Image (cartoon, rainbow, N blue to C red; front, side, top):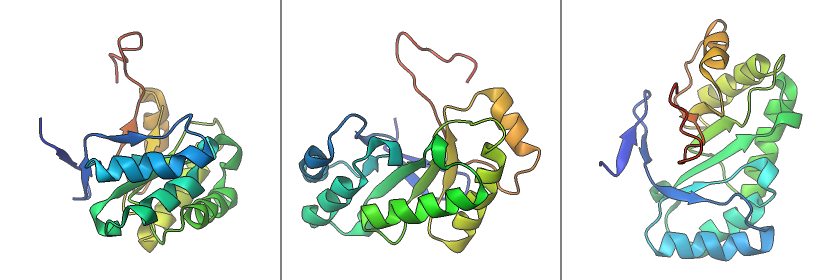
Length: 170
């Protein structure tokens, strides 16, 4: 298996990375730093994980050049909507201490809001502050609905996949 996956916009994303779900803020710094020292290049966090500050500190303490990492974060459900998605993205950047992220995702498809959130994400992408945008936990019908108004197609649909949740259709 290739170590990298080329997204539709040409950005290369590592196939394997460190996810920090359920990692406490105070532990995120060391977890991220140690993972980077061990060779990980992709770090996956989210606003709802409440550890973005620790993730950013771990990135800085690793001493690795920012360009060598792929950082993903996600828009939480309560922050969905056009204006609130812009604000939530700015808040995530501030907590991370970064000027850009490599991938920004809508964490879950909140009915009545995810299309407005996507419109904000398209603007964030076009501004260059997110190098790629996508969705997480979307089913086929959610993506089909999003595509009725999207100018930019999602570059990623991050899904949960394990032996007890096979997601065959996706």
